Image: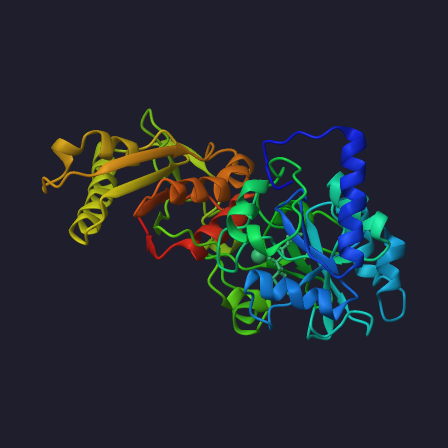
Amino acid sequence: LRNPETVISEPQAKVTLFEAAELLRNDEVVAIPTETVYGLAANAFSPAAITKIYATKNRPQDNPLIVHVSSLAMLEEILPDHRIPPIYLPVINRFWPGPLTIILPKSDRIPAIACNQPTVAVRFPSHPIARALITQCGFPLAAPSANSSGKPSPTIASHVISDLDTKIPLVLDGGQCYFGIESTVLDALRSPPAILRPGGVTFEALKEVLGMEELQVYKKHFVDVQLEMTPTTPGMKYRHYSPEAQVVLFEKPIPLGNGLVPTIDNTNCKGFELSTMVAMTILETDIESLRSSIAHEVEQLLSAGNRKFGILRTSSSSLQDITKNRGSTFKSSTEFTVVEKFLGSALHPEQVAHELFKCLREMDAQGMDVILVEGISEDREGLAVMNRLRKAASRIVTM
Ligand code: TXA
Ligand code: MG
């Protein structure tokens, strides 16, 4: 609700859900929690309502929306021949309801303004508020993430309020989103199937499902040329997830303390992929060179006039050491301040995913000039985390 501090009782909550459905029936937009991020929802069948989504978010018109359903019957209703392509059945069985979006043939029931393509992206969310609301409405809800276009997606209700407050009539507050990053977008209409956007359902988990053995995905260190060249998800061409502060991403995972470091394991995927974290002892000189490359980066940022540094850590790392021992590390005597936050353990990418957008926004709220972020490996949820971080970063330092 408007004031995120307000706790409402269950009967009141039912009234609020009813109110939200009423607004949606009247072509209004409502911000809703989902298990991934908050969405800005409107009636997927109403061009007038969908126009409001684009205007409210300031979203480019050629970036199509995801349509949210609360049952398979509702899905079948919006397919051209009312039939789910068989390739999707095992995936649906395994991951729905949940953080997976699938690309399907589009019928005329979905207006061109929601999606000006021969296909439509559909998701069946697991969040109880989202499901109850769609059921209450009786029609599917088109919903992009509920941020101003370009900002990190909202993972708590107050993020929505800070971006869109006066532009929308209602925010349903469901607390912090469970996953914290958006859904995985899967296109299995193409052969072999491909992940167009990594997200809450991991590549590893999808690949285990019947029919997904050849699943492809874009990874920085394992680029499939064909996937790279063909237009995939229209949204990929836009800048995303950017806080106000300049983001500098340090790509190679940073030592885990005790002289342990994640390193490159090339047993996987044709030897190109930066993959499984393997802990091994590294030489003192490696730590030194790592330190000096971070120190060099900070020196450059200082000379460009930056004074407030945010650090997002994923390990007990050298980013921290550097700023703590700044007297002995930095040549310049410029004063600067440091605010540090822990994103989660590099070995638990789901924790990092859960905190990432929230921490980026908190750094902005504290007026940081620069945010230095430690990368993690692309395993499991790490793939989605690194995808979002690379899009947020204005500079990537590869070590
Ligand atoms: O977790 C989520 O997916 C959240 C919650 C609210 O459900 N929604 C979300 O929506 O992230 P949005 O609009 O921020 O991202 C939708 C993505 C975009 O990258 C868009 O280009 C892609 O899905 N997309 C939509 N329709 C598509 C289509 N027909 N073909 C390929 N990509 C499509
Ligand atoms: Mg979005």
